[in-house]
Image (cartoon, rainbow, N blue to C red; front, top):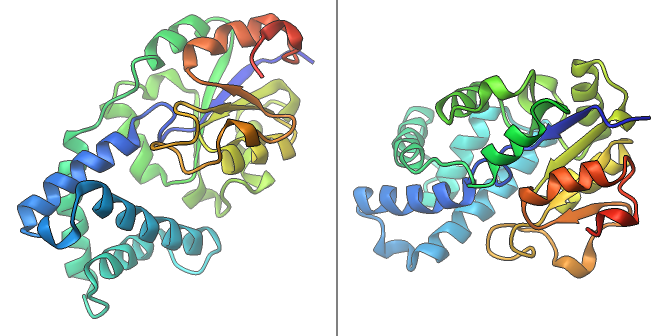
Length: 250
């Protein structure tokens, strides 16, 4: 069965989410007069990310809706459980302004999309919402590169659930075995895609270090193909339809 399409994750795969989140949060805390309260920028980001991960897990489990998980992140980060919805939304909105000012795609994104434009179809599967990701891709000049954009908030199921991957394949009219999934998280993206029957590629930009929250190279999930940059993807696809030994990327 030939590989016909590439499905992509967005954040920290195509889009430098960690870089934008770091710069945006730093600028936001400075503007809010809160920079000293949270210590060094990396300490503030670590706390923000911890709350983000916890409340995103609640959203993925169906315990809260998309907007409420944002509000709960703000309340916990500020230590203000009594903050009303309007106040939390306003605080998050001011953060988003700084975050958007730092948006950028990784330098290897456009070259690889150009290289694969005529050989493979392209789509996106994201653990976010259409309201969040569609404007982002348009602002970055990427939306027209993808024939489908499938998001967890609208699906009602998120990665690593196989149903999310299968829904994205169905949106493209393809069987899972005809699709490669590329993402930065070894468990949520790569293992999830593998278990759903897709061909899984883990984009490990920095060895599971500062950018990712995944394990290091030694713990690559079985059956997952690891690359350290998108420039390696075209040769991986061309080397063998099932990524055999000729690719040299394990």
